Length: 305
Image (cartoon, rainbow, N blue to C red):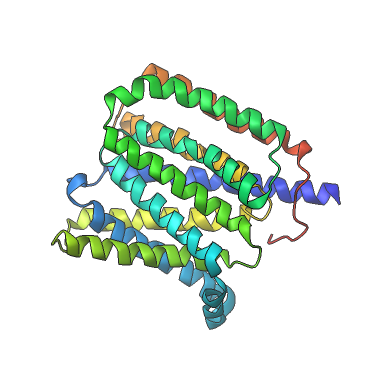
């Protein structure tokens, strides 16, 4: 039984890591926008709409029209998770259009710590010693990067990034709060709430949905990347505590900084030496957490694989 459980845990480990790798391309996609700060809410609208459509298509293909019943069982945990995900989506776009990619992504690395404490108090989860060690090491990496990075970035951008980290942590914890909460319906609800929220913001700002076509297809592409990543991330939530889920998603941080740095991709946003050093430390923390798989003992016997 232990061998079977460890196999499921390893599958979840790699799925969560791959989800983070998919999300890492989001920063590069946003950097290709035209006049990014002028179209934040329009971009969020199309990205949220795409995420909702992707999840609804997935649910329809898997269950047919019966998936509608899932929305009746979302409950408070699911609604809270959807709000958390909308907060993360919004904070991410507002942050990355106001400051550097490195600042935004490395501030997001606070998510595992927030998720760990929420998981302990709300879910009574026991965090493995190797995960605690990995989070402490990741925190050290964050400190190394923040010492110089914050001085070069926008304070408001960093604040929005921290808001995104908190929202993503709430979403991660909500996936494990109640087993009967329909995870994919929660994600679809988040996409729809994002659409509604952005429409309200556009109305308040007396703006329309119009933006350059380049930004439209970039937002749709970004929605596809986020949507597919969320499907993989949700599968992983059945076998990984909230702290580990968010820790593994830090692969997004490393990849995102790398993609905007590579000159061949046309952005060439050069991170500082402390940023690179801190990123290596964070990556080492992720590897350490993976090595600790043998200590894992809280794995559900239920398997979606």
